[in-house]
Length: 111
Image 1 (cartoon, rainbow, N blue to C red):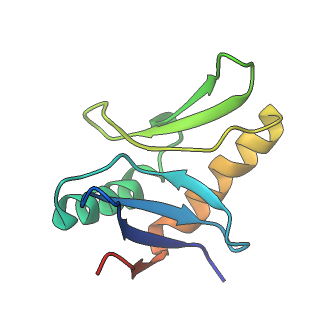
Image 2: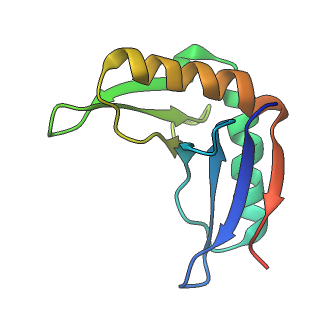
């Protein structure tokens, strides 16, 4: 089994998505989008860009916890991970995104 994308609508009417691991944990979250189609394009961008390691930017939060962002070809952030307790866990998260995102099904819960 591979992960899946969940497309949701926020209380303010905007759209966002999460990439979920097999376990159901969120491994990547998007920004919010005004239109469903824009969020769907974001999912496609994650699928395409997740195959390239240099699209992942490894970062450290102000509290010292590692996390990553996934950037599109134009340099825009298309997804961000949760905060991890170790760099090793962060690298595992990146591996999961690379493995799962390209073929992950989309569950549209935005209706």
